[in-house]
Amino acid sequence: MPKPLLTEFTARAGAEDEVAPLILDQAEEVRAEEGDLVHDVYRDEDAFQAHLKGPYGGPFNTVLAPLIEGTTPRC
Image 1 (cartoon, rainbow, N blue to C red):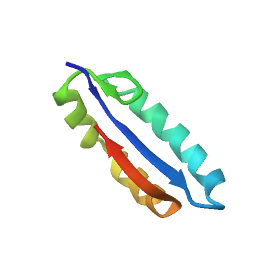
Image 2: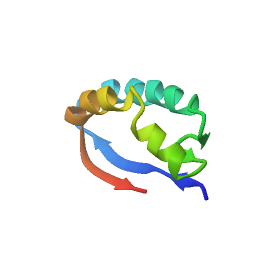
Image 3: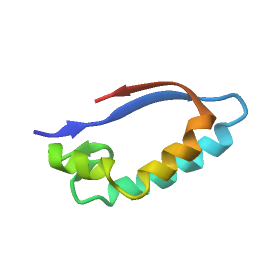
Image 4: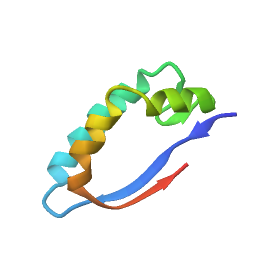
């Protein structure tokens, strides 16, 4: 069964120009994942777990976190 991942957030005032390219770069990495059917919709739980363990997610989240607010994950 496909496993979607959606996170809603708002870029902090003045950070919009930093957030947009981060999201676009991350999207390229995610689309290249073997189990990614459509951006952030995974083939199954195993593919989703592989995404979470990917080498780029941690650094992406570290850079993104101070630039956003109101994060709501929806899995």
